[in-house]
Amino acid sequence: MCLRLSGAGDDVLIDCGATSMVAMKRAGVDPNAIAWIVLTHLHGDHFGGLPFLILDGQFSRRSRSLTIAGPPTVEARVRAAMEVFFPGSTRVERRFPVQFVELDERKATMVGPAAVTAFPVVHASGAPSYAVRAEYGGKIVTYSGDTEWTETLVEAADGADVLVCEAYFFDKAMKFHLDYARLMRERHRLTCRRLVLAHMSRDMLDRRAEVQAETADDMQVLDL
Image (cartoon, rainbow, N blue to C red; front, side):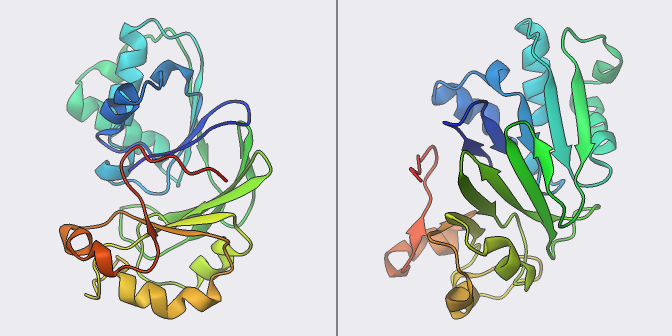
């Protein structure tokens, strides 16, 4: 999973999943131009692309600093992932600084050009998991991250220009994940201007024609 905020100064990534480097290069996005990354939680499909982005920067002589904001323990988890994939890589002197910022719940944190507020959600990941609300270029983008239904989604989506929200199954309730049927029962409480469904399983994709909401595709561009 990876969302890219662009068009108001520096780009900001929200999450950087395991296949994000492939997607960025396929879309013509230079990873070395990314200076700011926000992580919702510490699962491989949401932060597993970071070791590859960092190592790619080293090999391509990146000089621009990289700031990674995320839940508590974010630095330790990223370093541990790098050591699993590339043993010894955390001890190599890099050409560019990598800085880590721990997000505070319900308190705006400046991550480059974005004011990011983290809201706790219900998803076991070895550290707090968040929905994030990013104010960027005069727009508000909220991303649910992974979570079962929780009242904090109402708060995080309040007045947002778009809520990108997980809809893993169509109508099967699953712990730690949100299904489309439950989301639709709560839709009237979400005051976001647009709702875009993402992180869909095969179950959801096979029933896409029944969905009465926008759904995301890989490398899709949303104009806000």
